Length: 515
Image (tube, rainbow, N blue to C red; front, side):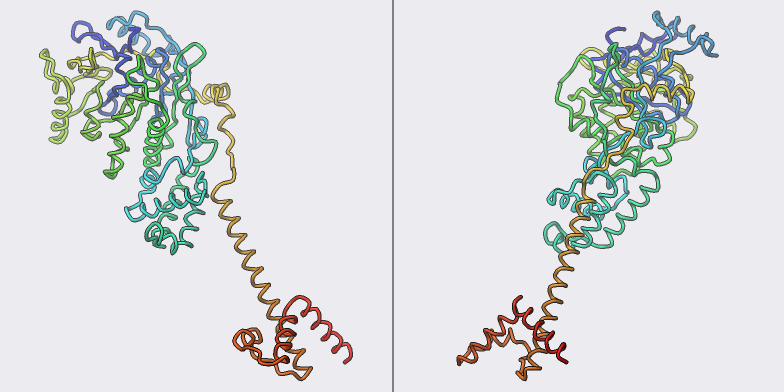
């Protein structure tokens, strides 16, 4: 059991003990099954096993039940006797109640430490997915990001993006010549989608301090991997935000982590609950991105496990990369259900002792058909398995205990206060203010020049000298043919300058004073 995560076993009616080998745990996995068949408990015991082996875990708590990982189970729990009997039946000899090191996170900053990223780190592809933009609008968003890079405008939060889009709309002419056409209607549509996202609470996802991935890959002082739990019960009200955030996190891990080949154990295990939300209505470019990340992130030492009701929720190309599988019961009430059941059974290595499709249909709550990778990464034959009982508390923590754990967390105080440093919004505001000042100064200079010319004309009129309609223009167009003409032009030039203006004002002042 020390070489892997003990998943469960059997007894007389079941197969051999099932162990998820740590050296193959980064080959990804799938936990599937109908509602109420035990997927959440399977996720809980896998998180316990990885943590005990010194592997950090990230998982989303969709139902609010997984916070109990932080507390040991209780002997007075109503299922205590059933848990003890199952542990004895499957040979789980060292079964005992214990809690695990947990860090709570929450995009909304209510049930956990705030978790943020910047708009720039999210990027235009994922942001377009989050905002549900069409192809044209996505193109305009890409232009905006490229222009921000070229202009040195940091994009940190939604205010920065909103200011950038306004600037892009105002400068769409020159930007269109450089990057491609920018239509005002597309800019307006993106702005409206940003407003919808903000109304859903999505603005809290963007800003600083941004999440440091190293904080999610830490171990406790006793060497156990920390279990990072994202509070997702409220987040499920905005499913597109939930899926996009988890995909961003996966992509960030892929971009930042170095290659490690085939480690003895993963550097991090990532559980993606309600995986169908990632692929529902996703454009092909996004699905291709997920496939690429799933295929290559294994070499970074990260294992990805999808949790969903039906294996058909996961695209075929990605499903083929999930080597470790736990299939809870699938119910076959309709023709479509029976087809999905047969398809799920076909993805397992057959066991001559039973029909896989029948086993998937008939297993009870807390049972599953499993297949773990064995020597040389070969899929093991399908086995009917009794899932082992959890060591931690089954069910959520009470609010007071959760608050106390958050206060004592190593992350307490690091992310709780938002930073607002100089970024695109402030820079563009300063540019606009500078342009406004320049325009005002230019208008003032023009007004002063016009006033001086009026004063000069008035002075000439009182002296009886004819003033041409535009003295400066006539002086450039006509060549002086006499000494008088040259002196006249010199006088006009002098009067147009600062000294001339003072002289004219003095003359006019004397005239009006005399009158």
